[in-house]
Image (cartoon, rainbow over all chains, first blue to last red; front, side, top):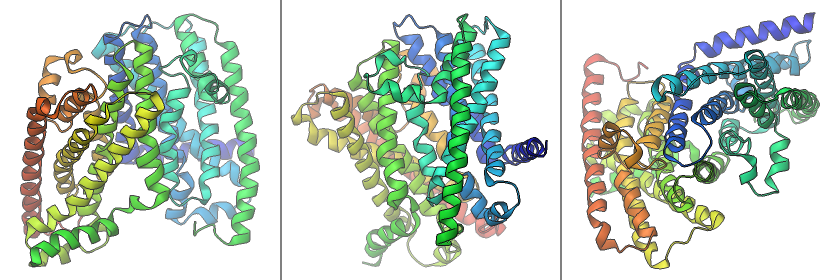
Length: 256
Length: 261
């Protein structure tokens, strides 16, 4: 119960912080729409049988991923700048429990990006918003947000020793957009790319959202997404132990 | 002589001091790897949608991505003075303003051109795009012109950053507009009329069109009009940027707003 309370309060607190940051707030509103606009124009002009709804869903999840990747990389750096990193590491709860709500809050902001992109496509490009399985669609969004938060958590922990972690976070925006199958079917990629795509929870989250919206079966994709998300959390906890031990040994927690 | 020193030496020193992305930890992921993934992303989206060739996206995105170094570096070169508490010292100095501000733009243009050239070279190799060797010198010139043109826009952005605290957001927004409007990914004929009209006054639009024709084997003479227009657009933005900078300088003296933000 105390763990759930910690996660909940941490999530709420960071949601409030993010919602008051002009960079994150305005950026999350506007930035994904640029890429969505390009995608809408390209798919509308192209001769592909894939529909604009296909592009709209893909562009919407792109926004969700942007909300996580660009900010999660710098999550611990930000604590360092605020002078709160040592205090957080020194608190009795496991540091992973402190960090996880931060990235979950960032991923939650992505729901806004998803909604904004779908509405933007609907009102400006006339893309129909027909969701075949609304409940599964909602579950798919929830599962995808959680798995994005979990992947962001791994990023945040992995990049803790890098002073320019935000640059690495930004770097992972395009590759996941690309090989996550958001706007490009995996079949178009070389064979060696596909196993990498399968190891990414966003790939399965995208599939689940798309299947739920278009009328397919999304449960398998959703389970794979949730399973990978849980795996990321476990990996993140293990990495946290190692990174913190290393930082203590080298006395580099605030210096990286 | 002093103005020449301010232009060349001062510009270079400021660039090294204030453009903090020059560290390999930031430069490599942000300016060398990211543009390659942007090229791949849009080339594959193009394949998925069945619109245009790989060459279209490689050329368009390689040039357009130079907006990132041009916009961000120019902003850091001017707005960064404020964070270092050196802006007031710069503005009370007797140095002439044209060499002072434009000397800072020179390394920005050079770096923007390098990023575009690198992206173009790597993008063509990865996607197997065939560009005639005879077009390379003309393409290099077009890339420099595109970087110059966008740096002009960056100067306006930098001037605004003297009053706006979140200049990174502004740079990202401008980058997003350039992504849509310049024809880097969407053929101008597919954009609504008002967007296509607006694109004629933006950096990159003419340079990208010229570069695509050169990549198809056209001679430099056949695209010289496009290149000339791009230069003209760059000069207009640079002139406006300079005027806005001077205006902000006067305003900041009048209202004591130099260190306010």
